[in-house]
Image (cartoon, one colour):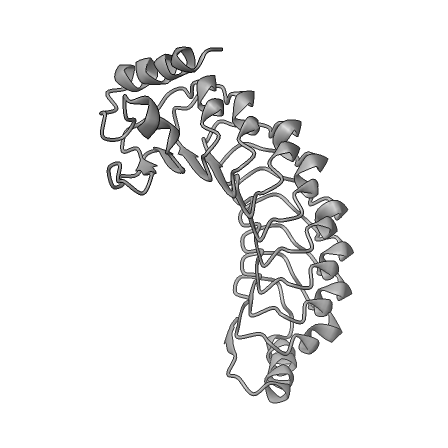
Length: 268
């Protein structure tokens, strides 16, 4: 497709959705400068000379021609009215940050593997019931958010994401965490609130860099005996579980606190 053809498609889409020139510029040079694009429900600044764009309107469709915006580094799509998600988005190989919170999305394309430079991926607030294996090839990811989806399982391939520093799995149907999570040695924040967890793997104690651990609103009755090895913990949240002996749980973390020079916040 000729340059002017795909640009015209984007401009037509912008006009149909009452998106002003200050947000989607109607000039070739400025359109190609866009590095950050936010589509959805939240207000944001208008186009500036630094090439950043945010939209402040509801969007019902995303044109496949956005896949030609090869300079995009950050793309955020949040719209409860969004229809089909174009595969061409996965041609944006310079993306380092991708957020898709469309509400109605039921699956993630296997073509996500093309986005090898991603460091931040958020696919929360959708209707995704399983994670394609291709997600776990994104080895540069530092932050992954898969919250508020009807996920029933976290694949053991999660261990491939060795650069992960933050992992959010909140409000899903997951009943267990694979032992392979213990291989994510750079994790400093792990939030597993509001799931169906009945136990945790012993390997969670391998997460020596963990500062924050969220386990509230699960079905836990006990914790691994080795959890007091998490000497860098600063905060742990355990409310609304099925612990039979909360004093024992607290003492476990108090022992942890004595091994560490920093204070520890415990909520149980």
